Length: 345
Image 1 (spheres, rainbow, N blue to C red):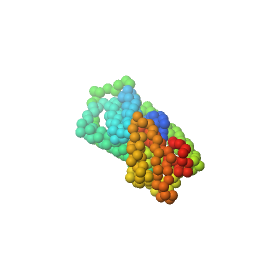
Image 2: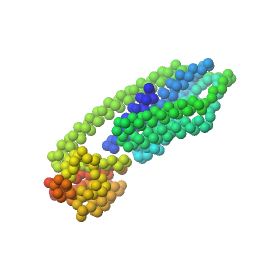
Image 3: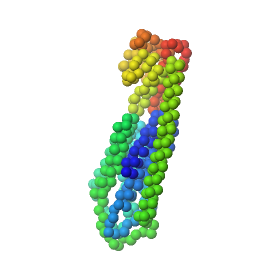
């Protein structure tokens, strides 16, 4: 359960950080990485504590703590790469490699009168499973999926962890060796159990705080969108936004009204959008829109006429395309009723 909970909560928090509108994603990424990394760590050592051999076991303190830090650090780095550089596959592979590293550090932390022998083939296979499944999970999440898509991303993360855990069990062989003594800095199983309980409480607390904050911000965004929609209706000003990472385009309700289109239909793109532009202005509109996507040109003003199915031909007074952090552009089209007033977003 702790594995599933960690995957679910961390994915929700990562998607919040991955929101194109989020101005400060790093805290969300850190919390998401902490929840996921700590969950993987706790899941691993719970499995080790469940192992009941005929000889006493303990755990090396340094490796146990280092594996915890490594898990969180590797997951944070992978999530950062996936978010900042729009490289979900690479970021996911880094996450998979990170949890595999944590896993084998945790196994190396086991202290018992035995020798550990690893099968290289199974070790590589377990790492490949973790990297592939985690990369697939981040790829699915990068497409801003609906509920089922998000659940699929969570399932893939769980498969990354479970696949790694089960395959690695086949990779290790314990050979009893009574000459091996328990080191003085070893952590007793009861102490490790307390550490795991603390980490579990940390996951629950961070997850709860994250979900509360997510609901609060979602409500603020909803209210802000309502205010913007009312303001656009009053000013006869619409807006268009495109996520440059996914290609998704969203039109405001007022933009649909300006163009005389049914708001229940998908936003027109490419040739469908150019068909709404006056034939004499289509080449200019295409070139100007392309110029607005150049990084050293943060915004460009467009002024062209449009064809409105409901009204015939009107005029788009001024439309500004604005690049934001390389992830989205926004346009503010004008209604023909307010010609001569240069008001863009």
